[in-house]
Image (cartoon, rainbow, N blue to C red; front, side):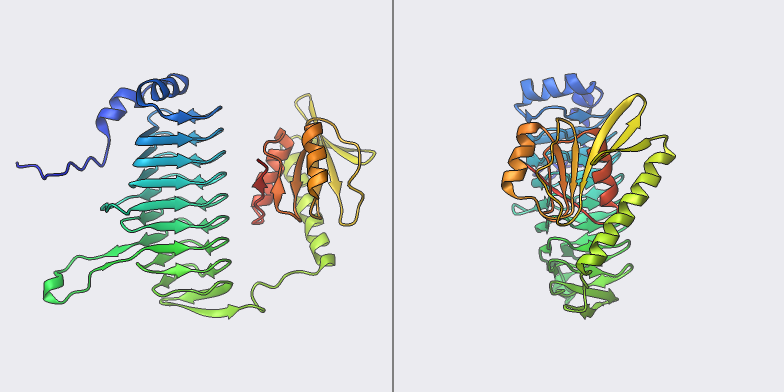
Length: 351
């Protein structure tokens, strides 16, 4: 059978045979030595997980899951991001921010054009079984969530355009802090503005303004500012934080974590290890003594001078008011940050 002019290797079998089976440290060494990839510290490749590209930059603490394939001409993946088991990401340009999560069995790919690009912002998540077609650019902003079984297409074609059938090739843009629950279908050419929410099982065929709630097939805006979203009062905000921390304590004690109060701190103990949490309520003094590996949870935004003091002391922080966090953390910091994510709270890492 005559082959086409341009080879189209959807599955990089040769690369998988050469590198896929290697243990993570050897795979990283081989990638750096033979392919010139720039790979940071504490990066982990599971069995069969590979990255195939001409220019590849992987930051610290990235994880590539079991049998996950990432391939493109130019690939960059930010700190603490991960790609789950059996996911497939293929595009000319792949740009993934930090703390982004692509879960299991996500498919990103399709026919390629010179401008094909897949951009995924920081602190985003794409859940299982989602299909994204980036023939034209798909750009997804920071802090956006895409539920499982969602479909995002930048091209629609099958029947003959010369017979009058429509053929569409248009980019898709999702802003920052957009939420697509499960089974949302986004059509070519759609732009969804910052802070918008789309109802589950909706079909989005037209643009959605920022700060809107849209539902249906096709999706129509049913609520917008100032009715959506409704921000809680300062008093209610404090009550919500209390409820979250109480639920966090219930969650960790179920897994045999012991919690005690010690002066201004709460101490969390597990398997002979102990970590301290300083919970700063709104209006409370921030200049309290902290030590290395302590965690500060602040309801009000921390000033730069306070953050600099924490950096010098190697104290970790989660700043709910300023929506920031320390660049790394103790096991307690990381567990609490993950738990806050259940309530939609995502914090940008310090540099």
